[in-house]
Image 1 (spheres, rainbow, N blue to C red):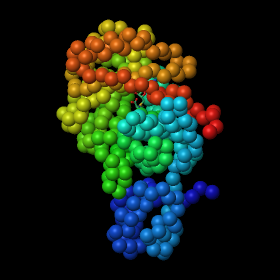
Image 2 (image 1 turned 120 degrees about the horizontal axis):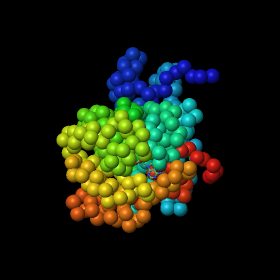
Image 3 (image 1 turned 120 degrees about the vertical axis):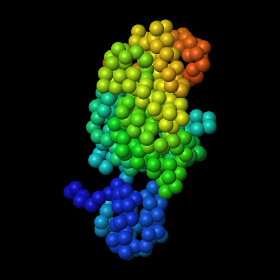
Image 4 (image 1 turned 135 degrees about the vertical axis):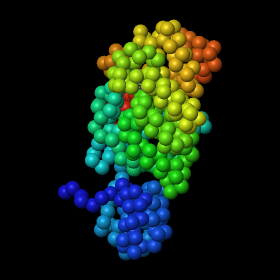
Length: 350
Ligand code: SAH
């Protein structure tokens, strides 16, 4: 039978405070409960051992304590680990732990499926099923913190919103999760360690800038040509490149944080000198750097990574114009954990 009690994780600070006041609890209980919820791995009120028994019972009478759960994991030869989380309504989402020499990056999801229609991305084929709640976004990081220590003997250093979904299309939950992850009742991580990646929803880039969170912004640009962009990212006809650029200029003015453009170089799509020159012109208008992503092949979509020589040419011409660029090596491709491959394909039992 469906439970009628609300999940305590979904309460705001004020709601929790008000509830505790209504049952005559001293105000310090709010912090104690928050610490249990956001800093400990618990699944029952009885584990809140510094609360009086009567209060634990009261909490139990009024609320559920529900978590997302690790449902399955898969290990790549390159040490990347992909996790499927089961949400309380049984939907699955994916997150990826990616260790490098000095870092452990976690790539998290913000939606079940995705609102957008990038033609080269497997998640887009799933369509959007629902947005994640802020506490579900938070719990991916909270639970993978333990996995990072278990497998790599160090805590997570970076969090990127580059898993399933378009984070800006789930704006309020993403912002709330970021505030909690960076707060001292949450994970207490520095905001500089977070990157929100968007396909370029200009009106929401303004809004994110106005939140003053101090997080990094990545934009999946992939081409600086409006016509090509419309073909490979059809939704973008509603967010044309000139409007995107205006929003990015606003972002920089407001935050002073350089934008990172993510860029796939695809054969016969954006691999000519003209394409490179258009990118240079775009990049000259706003402080930025470019991150070339290796294309991970997705079944049935007919895209192909351009020749390595074209990417080198891109880098050379960008550098002649003093635009910094890097190449991001693909990780976890053998287990469908790489960029654009997250699509809940769990045919390998581990
Ligand atoms: N919706 C957000 C968050 C997803 S991030 C965004 O688009 O930014 C996932 C990144 O992987 C994006 O830069 C996306 O464009 C890129 N990507 C999608 N499909 C890919 C593929 N097949 N190979 C490599 N990168 C891909």
